[in-house]
Image 1 (cartoon, one colour):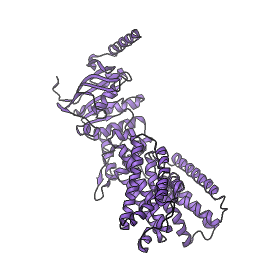
Image 2 (tube, one colour; image 1 turned 90 degrees about the vertical axis):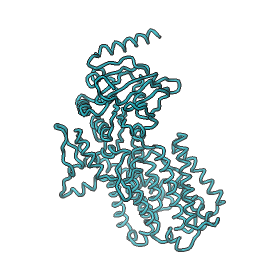
Image 3 (cartoon, rainbow over the protein chains, first blue to last red; image 1 turned 90 degrees about the horizontal axis):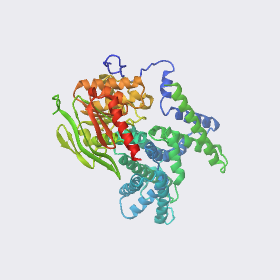
Image 4 (cartoon, one colour; image 1 turned 45 degrees about the horizontal axis):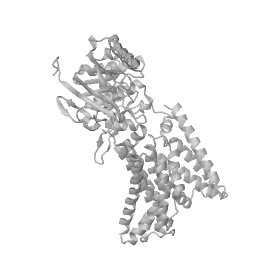
Length: 341
Length: 256
């Protein structure tokens, strides 16, 4: 590529890029070796299926609905993916999601300007992430256990401060529109956050160090990377993103429910990441994959809703579809590893 | 200053390191000159790795002094040791398998570009390719995930990374462990090329007596956290070393 080999005799020269041959089919191969390729195929197949199965699937109204299915899990996935990459998880993200709009509500009632109330709420969410992170890394409690604790703890706090009643998010129409009431605002936020998080993961030291910590924490520590700082930071990021998603949802719906989100939204976030190719073993993952994973889940939910599937069967069918989508994704991934390299 | 007039690069004096009630190092002293290769031999648990980790700032000794270029230093972190040009290639291969060759080369020393301080991937790729060419390490591509490379290639990249980061004191923890003859040859060639440059002091710890005597200028034998033998490789034989170790085994058995 851009270097001339000048190594000592005998040694095979290192090149800065693999040899690339272009021609018929190679563009497709180039696409297939991308980590996200298999899940993109799954998403496209699902969209084609539902598009044919139901004429209402690809209409403007339904695309708005679909985008609302996709946005929240996509943003939560951004945080969970960072955590999964460094071998952690936040099971209580859905609880932070429910708490945040109440923090905004009480902040505004306390007299704070709404934007400030939102920033304070996000700071409190980040502080929850800090607590989770510190307990996890300093007391060496697996985050699975730490966040199982905060899962109930935060619900308790939300129920106590709300006294179990829903609240109406404060602020005028304009702010509500920006934050979620306008049809596309939540998906726009989601896309912006996905873009920023993608940049964070792929193009900053923080992202690279997150991968290093998950891939080999000893090597990362030996290279001088502050392993605990990376983990705690990602817990804070995840909690803040979950809280922000909760605020967006509250403004979209026009009400915040103390029992909103919960395990459901958290697992949709984690599942989006995993469907999108993030390894549960740590050290690898993609934010863009998480977005596409969220699209797959959204298409399944929305598509089956349009099909008018029996409400009792709905979760069962979604579950089966997630399993099939994951299996297809993993098989395609294997195929990609063995044939295309 | 040493006998052959080459500057002393690093000297450790009376290093003591305990882990709870276990004394890992009990007053160990070593020194290495520029362009010299010192071999540290000893059984598992003798304290070789602990000694190396005290010199890289990973462990802090309980007592003892460390001098770099004749000046006493306190190595209270890996970063501090690095600032003195001390680099280590660890036994567990300090590479991240899920990252590419060039990301590993620049791990925690990433190049960034203005205006946002984002990673400069292109420049890191270019410099990695140049650096690997320079010291004659061959990999299929600098974008390859390290997991796809052979053990020898990984070790070579770890060494190249240390050298590229301007290491003047290079510590190698079992560089030849679990490696076939051909892969070992690759590493030994690399070490040889680095030694002829003359500006790098190297310490290698190993199990294989014959190989170590072959590669190193001097060797020390560590047993139970103490140095029990020190000599020039040319004047030392494998039998001599084995005899010392045998004597210890016999003493240990009598002790039972």
